[in-house]
Image (cartoon, rainbow, N blue to C red; front, side, top):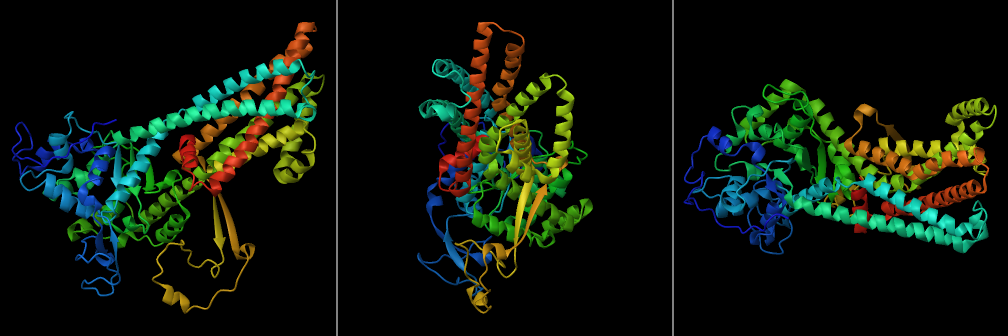
Length: 628
């Protein structure tokens, strides 16, 4: 954990300080003393700034002049703001980044006598180790957002990044090993009571419950250890470093940040850094970030300029994440109300109409964008990025169902398919017949899978296992690489709004004639299912599919490993000890099938809970973060 900071006022006369008394430094000198890739501010430093006394003050803000603030109002004031625009509405809120910089950073720490950026001040005066912070993530955000929400968004992002180090495959391997040893012990014990365990569930309910409870305890133990590792990784988020323009740029010398050209600005130089690992866009409820030109430029630079490279930097692709105070949107931290707002906001994105604080900056950025692409293509890129984030949010919600339900089903069916197929091919002249049978049925399966599956599910034969395994793997592929969109009739869902959304347009809605009541099915217009091609797979999709396939093979591994010894013992030896070992392995395989079916039932319950109550149960959100 990083050391606790003790904030002090800036002292321009500090001895030995390279920034002391240097008010009018040149841009080259400032950037040489502290390059952009070393102007990182850690999450813990942001939290200490958020916990400042001035940050607890609730202020009045005019929505018409969000960037500049407005005249103060008495506590409890409601209604139109007393500014020049009499129709402007206002509300109470905590300080935004404009006020944090003007009222705290510039007045208390980086005043006129110091003339430093806040990151330079931290390096020179506050950090006890005297070191720099290599930038790991570039932050694209809107200054008008409440600072506490910005810190909460970055906290969620840093925790998610740290939790991605979760060694899920190691825990799955450990679980499979422990479960295999446990079931081997149970098989030896139950062999003394039952000659065969093929119908154990029908003969002895108590023994069946013993197998289920014992394996459940092993699974709970491994899952608890995995969650403890996830919590430990999440605590490492306090050391995550960000590049934030408000703190990396010298607010007394903004010309240094802008530079002669847009490509030479501090924003572009920070994005070109070799140490940069990712970029996070902090999206507010109204998606104002897309109406700010500098924010649009940052997204454009990451998506269009960096992948092609430049004269002074090599081509690279930086992962782009979307985040808010609820979590990382592109990794699943999204509530339904914000989802509806983002869907409505991205349809109105027009970067050509985006504004900057200075007109000269607007001209530079617009000209730079026109040299590389068109504003229309940039708008399409921004909408695509947001849609990818929304699709990833849906994938994260499906992750418990994929990994805890369909993976055990696929592993159970896969091991059964291999076992029965090997046994069938081991018989004389049965190999060619089985191969032809599987070829014909596979082609026929592509047309009438569901109908055949229902019919043959009455008996657990090789065909049942085959169709079940193919179906489970197909569903895993669909859930990992597919996205689902539901379209409603216009009159039924003309303007979907969350329950807590603003109701300022109630008068206009009241004048409309009420739409006739429709059922859900009658209101449904279309259901779209999109499958991504390999070139368009996102990081989260690749990670989800890789972990799902690893889970399938780890769970199916014991069942597959038992098949060769069973064949050798059944056809190669006839001694009494060999028969005993054969019976033991058959019993062990029977128990393992029972365990996989149990996991699938529990996984179905967890997957259903993740859809219904995930927003109210913190453990489910932590579990989703540990999974993906």
